[in-house]
Amino acid sequence: MEGYFHTTQRHAADSSGHRSGLYPGQVTPPAERRSLPNLQQRSTLAGEAAAAAAEVETALHTPADARSAAFFDVDNTVMQGASIFHLARGLHRRKFFTTREIAGAAWKQAYFRVVGVEDPEHVADARNSALSFIAGHTVTELEELGEEIFDEAMAHRIWPGTRALAQMHLDQGQRVWLVTAAPIEIAQIIARRLGLTGAMGTVAEHDDGVYTGRLVGDMLHGPAKAEAVKALAAREELELAACSAYSDSYNDLPMLSMVGDPCAINPDARLRAHAREQGWRVRDYRTGRKAARAGLLVGAMTGAATGAVAAGLAVRRRH
Image (cartoon, rainbow, N blue to C red):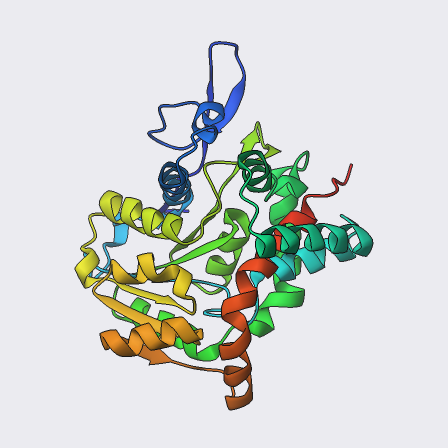
């Protein structure tokens, strides 16, 4: 479309002629970078990949405020509930996996989280299988199904208050990006449907348009979100001190703390307390009962539930 360009994963052939999903500027082959043991390196790679895959508005119509932008988390910030759960539910209805299979995988994921097992091989397997449910499927297929699942399960769950905040930034001539652990393809669908600039999400490696089931780096979660924002800000020449960020989760503190205008939306208990200490804005669009219940449960359950769903999705491929 005139006035916009899409920065997506590039495909480059290595010495053996194999083509792998690469992001602009990547030097080390994905197979080698995935083996790096350092969490910071994986977060950096995930953030850079997400920023490279973001849909970016360009200079044909220069934004009125080109130095600042707004970054929104998705789950429980823009949308009620976890987008990956809604995606899993939609894929379950389309026979990607059975209820028994996802229940078994969820139990295993919960066990390892509660017991605290940190076996390096298990951690690597869990990370690399986070989006393996799409292995063998095409990018086009996931995008088409994502459109359907958004209409049936996500559109009516958008928080009107958060949507209004995003529109406020757009009306001020600023660009607005979503930043989420959900697959980048789903994140871009949500951003496009809401009329936002673009999105950054977890990037899955693909070979000639077919997913390998492996991630580029790690899931876009916690520190990786901050790395994505930093990479995009550098490329777009944004001043982070003039930018805004919105999230419901204490896990997103790295992203919230790097901008000049952080805001807690429907916050969990730890983020609410931190926001009050720092004098940050707080907005809660839930009812009193929902907010109270979320304050008790979200902090303990959201991470485990998201991991369980992702692991459950990995147990079966549809052929």
